Length: 221
Image (tube, rainbow, N blue to C red):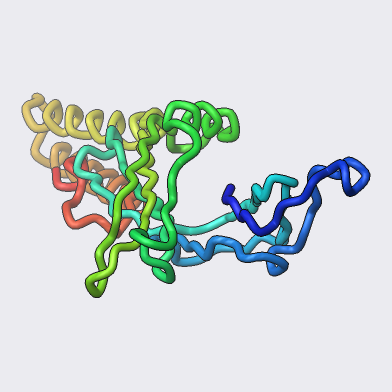
């Protein structure tokens, strides 16, 4: 965060060439913002800000938060999800008091985010876009900045553990059904295939998120 306070300025030559100082967050006014989609998280213990001699404030506070995100898993495991992270402040109207603007472009933030994202997990961070708009509540407009985060699922593990075994079971089922085996052998094979399909269905059910309105195609067949 960066903001300007014209009442907190001084001439460095009058104070031993001191051009910046570190102060607690409650020393001066700071922007009261929060994340709309936040449901849980840890507040930072770094409650300090840097004040420059020209009245410019700078505060870097790392947050670790859990957000709500609507998932569309119809194309699972080849799905792409988009989640929003909205930063707002409903204490000061945007028209007269408080307006938030991004200092960096989405391309610059995308590059920084990819450099910080070092883990090779299930999701691949693909795109980041920023929307700046005014939210109207009770006939007052409030400044809101929304980060739209796009993530692509890495499907390799699900293909190897779910899709290929499922296809193999169906092919085996067709081969046994139309094969020259006796009726008793076909029944035994069918029972084994049904048990294997049931185990895969249990594994699939434990792997899928439960917050989607539509089940995935692989789960409906």
